[in-house]
Image 1: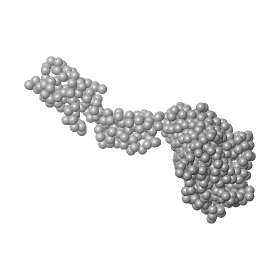
Image 2 (image 1 turned 120 degrees about the horizontal axis):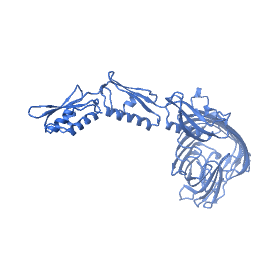
Image 3 (image 1 turned 120 degrees about the vertical axis):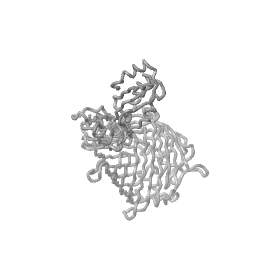
Amino acid sequence: MIKRLFLVLFISSAMFSSVINQIVISGDITTDKETIIKMLSSSTGSELVTENVVDDIRRIYETGLFKDDITAEPVFHKDGSLDLVFYVAENPMVTSIQFIGLHTFAAKELMASMDLKENSVLDYSKLRKDIRSINSYYQEKGYVLMNIKQIIEPEDSGVLIFVINEGIIEDIFIKGLTYTKDFVITREMDSQAGKAFNINILKEDMRSIYNTGFVENINLEPPQAGVDSEKVIAVVSVQEKRSGSFQFGGGIGSTSGFFGFLQLEFVNFFGEGYNLAVKGQWGEKQTNYELRYQNPWFYPEFFGPRTSTSFRLWHTDGQIDEGQGLKAYNTGGEWTLGRKLDKRVSIFGSAKVNNVRAYTPITEPVTGVSIDAYNIRSIGAGMSYDNRDNRFNPSTGEFVSLRADTSLKVLGGSVEYLMTKFQAQKYFPLSDNFALGFKGQADAAVGTIFDTERYFAGGSTTVRGYEDGTPFGVGGARIMGTTELRYKINETMSIYGFFDIGKIGRGFAECKVNSAVTPGTSAFRYGYGMGFKVATPVGPLRFDFAWGDGEKYGGFETYAPKQSGQMTVHFNIENSF
């Protein structure tokens, strides 16, 4: 570091006891000389000590402002005193700071975090700190392959240059694909060739790919060297799900009763990401036929990336609702157009046509419950926020959605109404296999709604612990909440405990409102219990063993009175939330 130190200084200090008359900083510098003198160990009026002078040279160098050929020399006077002279050469001026190899951040963004500024002396201490700061800036944001290759010092030009390699992606290799087209996977990724390798973005990309439902497992492998030695190839390893399936079987559900079904489904039609399914179900309570189609990337060149479309056609003969057991012919279709604004926020619009025809018009003279022919012609819109780690079996993150649907006579509907739905879910990971989940939901209608369109509470899909088909309330507004503590045994099976609570009200709707609440007691009803879930090709099979609050329910309209508090078994092919 120090190229030379005049030996006469040390010889003199060993032979004589000399007092320092003054300290002189010699050199053409812009740095305040008095500031330098104040930081030295040697001082005016003190004796010259070799160790102090050596330390003073080190201190001057460590300011970072001077070149490493710092020297010290004593100048003796006749009275035996001396002047201690330090010869220094200041580092060049930095008139401009430039970066070569930037793709991700603007130069101003990096310079804002630096201590070294333009139009100042090159300060090596600040430069070393700035190198660490720039590296940390990239690392904290996930650019783990970035490195500063070279620093070109100003010298005569006055330009300080940082040569940076951000770890640019040359290509993305999807390992393990046999049926799915590469673009179906890579279009879900924000990581692209020409962008810098970012571990955080790639992890988010893997979440997006997994949530397409096309893969069973996904892993990020170490990047490989590209053809260009300064670039890398990102490697993502996947295990594909079966793209198509033909399923048949039967069973019993607490809502549907005994049933048999046939289903042909392609979750990744032609390996291009389309979803197509045809299903027929014949059962004790209803016969149902359904056709579904979904395209998650619908004309991106026209609508933009991540625009989806779907339609659904159905015909149901039998029970047409979940909770009230009303029977009719229900034929309809729904079309939805959605757009992901980013990987978490989505918006959508929909249109629905629904025709309901009763077997025979029914009006209960005592309860007033009726069902007759009616038409629904509705349009709707909504938005959602979703950052769950796994939409099929989440353990962390949030999901929030809001939607509104309106039926209008001008569109051919029998009545006019507005129905709104708000839903929020939150998940907390407690350990590798334990997770705590919360769900809140609020529904409200404005206008006239038919008896078959009312909200209900009590049963396997609302508040468990009450028999399906006998709700504890029906009306024009509903609020519900659920808490579940889940334990994942393996990838296909989990167990959980739960607590549900709900309430039915009128809201702003013109409809009949009934509940089994005893006058003077809380309108909120609750249920609790435990259950287990098994993943199958037809969907998650859920078995719930639940108890209600111990009070009576039913006993209004067409529902026989029943007593809660006894164990009720619910069976469904779906997630609770």
